[in-house]
Every structure is written in C-alpha cells, then in structure tokens.
Length: 295
Image (cartoon, rainbow, N blue to C red; front, side, top):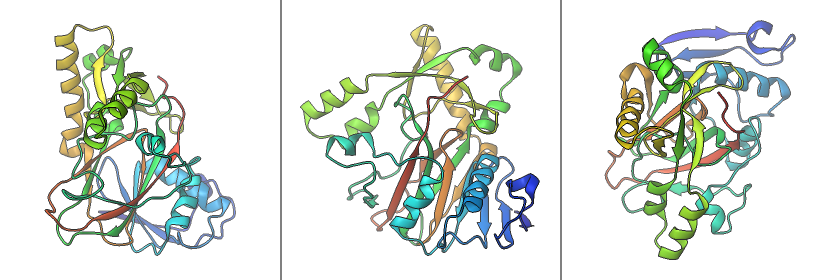
C-alpha cells in the first residue's frame, strides 16, 4: 500500500486556506481504492471537508474509513455531500421515504441479500445513484467482505478495436433478478416489473466530474445490447461484464464495526461475498441521487 500524508494543498483539494488537520491517503490497489486515516467524519461537515471528500472520491473511486464513530444521522449528512438521499425502489413501494434510514441484516436467514452478483446500484433507473455509502454495524469475524471493481480501468484495458465496437452502443437495464429475490407477492412482482420494464444507458459513459470514460454494464442489471442480434448481444455482454472479474480492476474490503465505504456508483461496481455462513452482519446504506449517464 502506498501511503501519502496530506496537509491539504489547493491544487489537490481546492482549498486555499484549510482548517483540516493533516491526514493520510493510503492507496490500496493500483487502479482504485484508498484508505483515509486521520480525517474526522464525526465532527462538522464543513464546506472544505465536503469539497475534499468529493475530490478524493472522484480520484480514487472508493474510499475506506475505519473506526469512524459516526451514527445514522451523521452518515446521512455525509451522503448529502454528494446529493439528496434516495430510497430503494422496492422499499418505496412499501412506504419507505427517501430520508428514512433502515439498517439491514444480510445473510441466509435475514431481511437482505446473502451475497450479490457484480452490480452498480440501481442502474435500471433513469437516474441511478451517484454515490453509495455503506457503514458496518455488526460484522462477522470471518468473511462477509465487499469487493469493488473499476469501470474506468475495465474500459481502459479494452483493446482499441473493442472500444470502437462498443463506443456507440446502448444497453437495457432491468431489476428482474433483484425483484424475484425480494418480492414474494405475484401481483406486486408483476406491477414492479411493469414499472421498471427497461432503461437504456450508454455502454460507455463519460464521468460527469472527472471526465474519464467508464464501461457501464453490469452482471446484475444489464440484460441486452440494443440493436444487436440476440446471440451477439449475449456473447458481447458476457465479455464486457467479465472485465469486472479481472483482479487488476478489483479491491476487496474487510468490514469491522464502524467501518465506512464511500464509492462512486457511476464508475464502480461491487460484489457481496457470501462466505460467512449464519454469522450476523448488519449494515446501513445511504445513497445519493445522480443524473442520467451520458456518453
């Protein structure tokens, strides 16, 4: 890991004068991920701190913090640094409001997922989340990690021929797998799938804040490529989603109580590792609204 001690400088963090004490940015992998040490998230979220968090995130794609000492309200305040809060689309149908915070337990006998496929959150929406923030409340002693993979490095590793092939394509995103897993009532399931019947996004998007190209397809929600024969669509989509399996695009985070991960949902996918048996695992998620992805 590559550690850098920061007394924030104007060129890096857009703050000519700063009251933020020195802190460390420890790069975790070559293509994404940084652990931030010595940055107090439990205190006031000033304009300077908000600018700093945004700049760090657009640079490193996913930020990790340990022993944060924050509660639900402070996590929500951090979320608002990146945009207004948004409730999950299934939860909304059950009366959950955007500002509500509901911890979820994950595991084979819980009210949430036990593991996930690779996905970016809610890409089946016209305006998917810009940022996701996850905090660990209860963590298993072994297992239960979350892995993150960079759509930026996945795109950059494509051959020039493949970049030309996919540059102008769109893909259809649907929440079918999620819906079948979480909705038991047949009528409710049919209504939900009718409401979210498919949203088209570019296969390659431009990040709105750092200007970098991002491969924007995921195993969880991307179902087909527009304008291609079914067989060709299936094979090309499989090839593209498998780029997120490559170790050089991945960083893995081990949760401890009080740990926090903030990731750029526009450029990063994540994968919940289902290897913790019946151990208890509780997390709190806050997400920030984004805009529609653009080429």
